[in-house]
Amino acid sequence: MGYSVDVIEARDRLGGRAHSVPFGKGTADLGAAWLHSTPYNPLLPLAKKTGVEYANTNFASHSALSKDGRIDQIVLSPESTTAPFETMTGPGLSWAWRSAIGLSAPDGSAGQYMEEGIAASLNSVEACTVRGLYEVAFAAELDDIHIVGLLGSSGTDPYWKPDPTLEDGLPRSDALMYEGMQKFLEILSKDIPVSLNEPVRVINWGSDGLVVESSKRSEQFDAVIVTVSIGVLKNGSIKFVPPLPDSYRQALNGLSMGLLNKVLLRYPEGTKWRTDRQFISFCDKDPVQFAVNGLALTNDPAFFGLAGGNAARAIEQATDDELVHKLHSQLRIATGIALPDPVEVRVTRWSLDPWALGSNAYLNRQATGYEKLALRQPLVGRVLFAGEAISIEGGSVDTAYFDGVRAAHFLNSG
Ligand SMILES: Cc1cc2nc3c(=O)[nH]c(=O)nc-3n(C[C@H](O)[C@H](O)[C@H](O)COP(=O)(O)OP(=O)(O)OC[C@H]3O[C@@H](n4cnc5c(N)ncnc54)[C@H](O)[C@@H]3O)c2cc1C
Image (cartoon, rainbow, N blue to C red; front, side, top):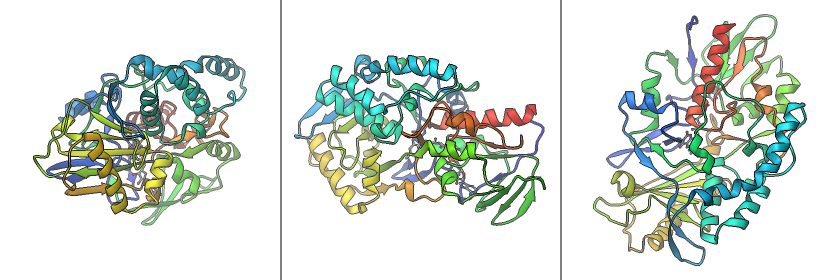
């Protein structure tokens, strides 16, 4: 693209919030695991080219464990997943005209509107399953998310195309990268020079030139693309000299870091349970909202539990033993079999990871709707923010990737 590129990475590995580790005979993802919304996800053709194996999943297929211990086998219909959004037409129209004349977004939380839709159309089992799916998808409590987080931040992303099937509220086909998301990203970045173990501490963008100070060097660059999370941007571990202008700091106030955590349990080879549902959802959200049925998807005797929002925060207050005991007990009830003790366990605590400080950003109740647009403005034309933190289209691997492409195109065209 006309620039030589140097990637400066704080960690001792590539991948950031995509982190794959050995698990049993294969691999488990502690961070991102799915390419969502296939076949529309623009990264899927790249994944196919690299030959990384994936399994198609359907987030509508659940065994649901109610709070009273009842188990229902459900396949969420398109109607049940659009129901939470049926109340959004009014605020959506209001946001469309307000943004056309530069006003801030209409007031209200995502929870307020979604609960109305849920209460009007879903039975209690569908309701708790759908709620759990969205708490995990948004990595936050629905009441903490500004309605504009669902209506879409002002602006559009020229390098990313939405999945038209998402109009029914839930992706129906997602690629679980069971050989590891990190492997896929490492293949994508194989020709790019990366310096590991090098935290950036200061970005000087004043009149003396653009100088990056890290743990290893102080070096002048023509341009810088900053792709750290909103958590890292907000906690000030990278100092900007001079400080970021007010418009950037105000934009950061409207964004919060959400939290998604995982509890992964592997059972002895040969352990069997029913495989006609891909997920088990837990209405009491303790310790997770739902678990992926590994046996159903990849013939792997494992469950991958996912928790978002308050449930993910509770995971960080508990010990591994407590979490394993709770999830294992719930799984015994949900599968209806005397599962033996798990032989391997992994628990994540992403808010304690200093280079992520959470899982992905959401627009909080202070948001105006213009936050991402404000953060997309280049500083002195040469310092750009990019990645999941800035992506207008959502908090996933593909949107992060294409937001990076947007920033690179800007520099290349300048
Ligand atoms: C548990 C979990 C599950 C998820 N599941 C999915 C999923 O299934 N599908 C999906 O699409 N997305 C998922 N996501 C979201 C996805 O992982 C992120 O949106 C995406 O990986 C963000 O990419 P990024 O490049 O913007 O940021 P990052 O991956 O965070 O990359 C930023 C990099 O900056 C580095 N860094 C931070 N501070 C400094 C510093 N001071 N100096 C130098 N380097 C620094 C970090 O180490 C990191 O490598 C999940 C996230 C989590 C945590």
